[in-house]
Length: 183
Image (cartoon, rainbow, N blue to C red; front, side, top):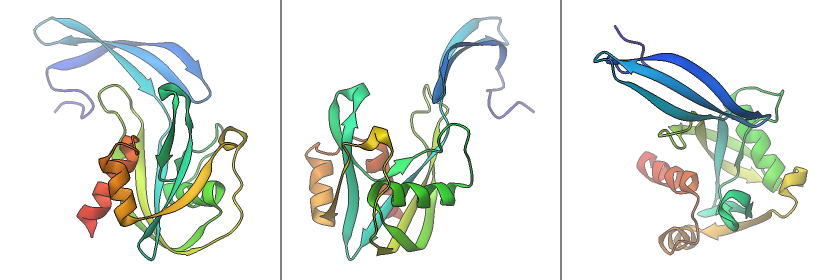
């Protein structure tokens, strides 16, 4: 029986970390197939994160912030990972991210599923939660979130933002799609 991480006709022969910082690393894996051919995979390793669909009375809470890699502001569901050196279960992470980014707390939490952000080159996965029965409070954003904006949108507005390209974050679109499937 083959290792689930590798197809039966391929096995790794080496791995080298090419770059690393506290938030991510990039490695180059070499492999050999049973027919003798060799190849290389470049893999971005990042810690997993949690995403929260916070909904109250048919309105969805989104945050907007500048996303450096794509050089634009982005509307998204609240999401994030543990800071380097910290950890815990995914529900605790989701609760912390919602409170940090929006100030909201929720009475009801439903785990919608687990997805991978970009499985063609990245190991990072994320858990999706639906938070309801919300209570407002003060946010506690990190320094890197100083420009963050928090707003609520009706479901019709959310759909329009997805449809017209205002929302470009793939995890947000996937999360909303999974919510629709689960309803």
